[in-house]
Length: 138
Image 1 (spheres, rainbow, N blue to C red):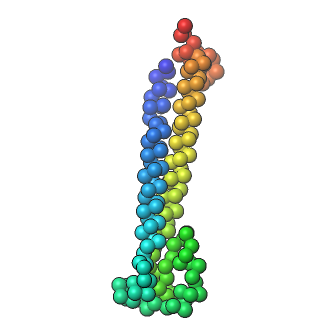
Image 2: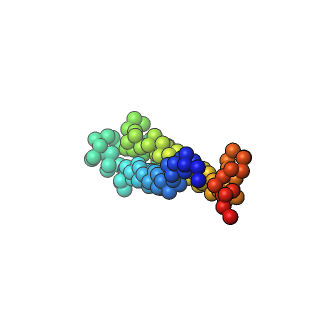
């Protein structure tokens, strides 16, 4: 087997990318849950007692869709105070992209390894000369 190609193949392990995307997905879900549950069960009580912010029920009724959507996360006490920390939404977006990138890399590396394995079995090399390691086998 071509030593240079073998070294490159060892560096790119699909399970590492799959582990990366799994951990990114778990971190995404945990971060999203942190944001979704930021207001607790009683938002009015959380705003007034724990955050020291006045709870504006009229504002909340007028903007109910904001507090019930999946993304971006918001849980407003009033027009100027959000219970969801500012870092939650960018982190969820970044981790979602990292998860997708990890899955794409898993597929790409798996495809490259499979293609190299099939070429080795056929006895051809990637440069098209037919001088792969399988050509000398009987």
